[in-house]
Amino acid sequence: MFTFRDKTIYIISPEAWGVMRISKHHYAIELARMGNRVFFFEPPTLQGSTRGVLIPTNEGVRRVTYKPLARGKKYVGRKMYALMQRRQIRRFIRELTGQPDVVWCFDQGTFDDLSIFGAPLCLFHPVDHNLERNMPPLARTADLVFSTSPKILEYMCPSGTQGIVIHHGLNATFEQFARQRLELMRGESGVPTFGGRIGFWGSLFKESLDRRKVLRLIGAFPEYTFLCWGASQMVQNNLAGKNDEEVAEFIRALASSPNVKMMGPGTAEDFTAELPGLDVLINIEFEYSARWDNGNPHKLMEYLSTGKPIFSTPALMYADTDLLFISRSEDVVSDFRMLVEGWEDWASPEASIKRISFALQNTYRQQIDRIESHINRLGGEGS
Image 1 (cartoon, rainbow, N blue to C red):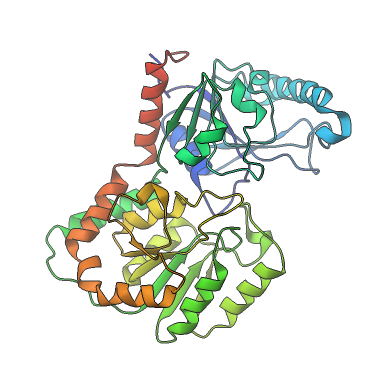
Image 2 (tube, rainbow, N blue to C red):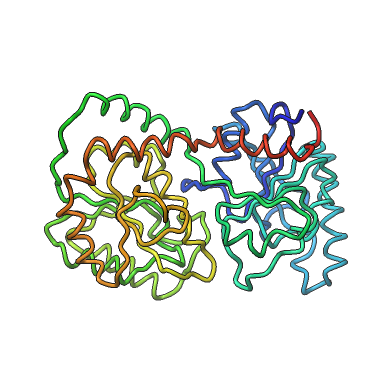
């Protein structure tokens, strides 16, 4: 029987290690906690060493940074680039990491063939769309394909390969906060007073963020305070996103608004420390996004774990639940007023406990256990 214990695991990430953490970072951390040797491959850069550099982290994950042998497929051709990748990976295995037991790939574009790693088990785990809405070649070389959205699996899972929807996970910091909050709430009966403190946690550079609606909401409620956690400069941002004048203008508008507090790119610990003073958390995104899957934004699971009411644009994976206040119209201001008017219902202990309980059913350890079960049902490799 396959288990995620005492394995050498490669996490192939399209995003670097940094302060802001999303699914690939959290899976790496949890797998390391479970006694695995986890190597987090950051996107290749034009700086550094072609031999690769190992960088330890406080969480037990080892980062791998490297410069590719060639700048890209278009310079040397796809076949030659794949041959050079294979050669470079074999060197990493010999000199840095040892042979991987599992390759867990979140990156859609760096590698076309996961078999070059020589691992008994290869997982492809796309959590975002690609611009072309097509299946990347590496999907055909994966043993299993997982995603946080059925919309992504519709075109990223090849015929004959098992495709499975796995919800976003909840990291240990939010899990600890949720369990403590749940314990406190079990004896509460009253509804907290709405204090007009609104929180946003995530990337201000995210392509799908509906910046126009966010600014409209802030401008319509000068009596409320909006606290925004996220990098305000691209140099602080380790996540993918837009970096153009529209984004720069948006960040300047936030910073100059008297009722906005720019909290910076804080850690989960920074955010949870401020949570007791927040009333509502917001997730405002476009209905359609070229790259991001708005059907299941990562931050929603973290938001749910707090128990706080959540004001959100539609999210497919939550369509059949009452966990979020969904803003369906263009008039985001009127919708937010409706949330405040219905505060007694949305902020009740019963509603808060329901949100927290849902999140606690989706910790990263539980998601790994679910993936492990799928591997074993399909005759997984190793033991």
